[in-house]
Amino acid sequence: MRDFARSESAAVQAQLDRLARLSVPDGRLGLDTIRALLDRLGNPHRQLPPVFHVAGTNGKGSTCAFLRAMLEAQGYSVHMTTSPHLVRYNERIRVAGELIADERLAELLAEVLDAGKDLKPSFFEVTIAAAFTEFARVPADACVVEVGLGGRFDATNVLEPEVLAACGIAALGIDHERFLLAPEEGVPSEPIARIAFEKAGIAKAGVPLAVIAESNPPEAEAMIESVTSKVGAQLIMANSYGNGAIDPEAQDYPEPGIRGPHQERNAALAHAMLRSQNHLRVEESAIRKGIACASWPARMQLLKDGPLTALAGKREVWLDGGHNPNAGQAVATAFAGPMHLILGMLDNKDPRALTEPLADRLRTLTIVPVPGHEAHPVEAFGDAARSAAGVEEALRALPKDDCRVLIAGSLYLAGEVLRLNDELPD
Image 1 (cartoon, rainbow, N blue to C red):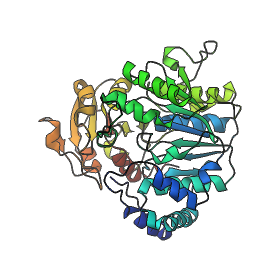
Image 2: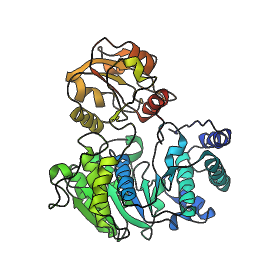
Image 3: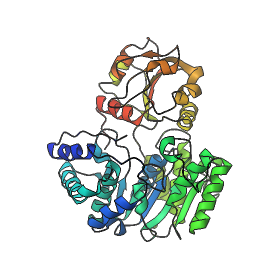
Image 4: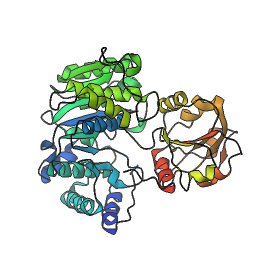
């Protein structure tokens, strides 16, 4: 599935239309295309400031946000590339702390698309080539790079040991089965071990790779240990803040700025990555400040007053892009008491991922479409579910009470919610 995008800038939209026409030939795996494209662009991935590379199933985006916040709290200038975007494609490329401007984005995409016209790259390969090209041109102190899908064959995995400061793997779960569990000789057959094998594919010789201890099943931890040992990476098994701080002498870490008890684990992973590297000095005061001020839209986000939340009266309206069972458990842990759930899920996701963990506290369950994507119909969620044409209709139809509202199930839906509420990620 491609991540279609729209822009109010005609120049950017012209390039996004070219991006939308790209497709990946069935069965194509490997890094040959992205390497060929980067070679034509002067190999910018070899000219980056120290890179922090993050993989995982749940929490890798939040870990990137904590890394950026901690580094910026130390006074460093930080490039960052993450995916998917929620409202604007520009969100994928943050240059020295700022979202890339439309004028420069249009020029950059045109340059990359022209360079790779005959290579038939994917949407994501073009995006990563564009990000690395800009990051190599604009001075900064560090780069934070989120893996798109998997790790071993992800376009970001062209990064070489010479530019890597540290790697990290956030919590693992079963997701993107069609791609990450595709039959292949010589790889693990047990699903969670195979997922770990793919994510650990970012490990590089001599580069520290951090994981939060006991955050994954034993077979996943064993696979990560096996892969890192084989390639000669330095495996760092760190503790979550909830399990005793990374530094036993420093227990007073603030509450993470990104809500949810599981965010202690993601903050701890970012902390471990910074402590394991020797490229940049980051003081404990900056770590604490970064934990407290980090933000990441559509992750346990309390929406502000806006056109959409006005439809819910005086209730709190929360937004989360979680869509797999691990995310469902995290949401269930974060929220106590009864709630109204407005849910939109892509049809390749488990419809029970959120409804089962929250079942005993749902006052109503309303199913909405995910704009621009194939989504589960209301019938997939049982007799208690009802449907609405969109989030606005779902909010208007809620019964009169003071129970909070949670809108969840897809980052694509989350992007539409932020747009409707005039809360554009910055």
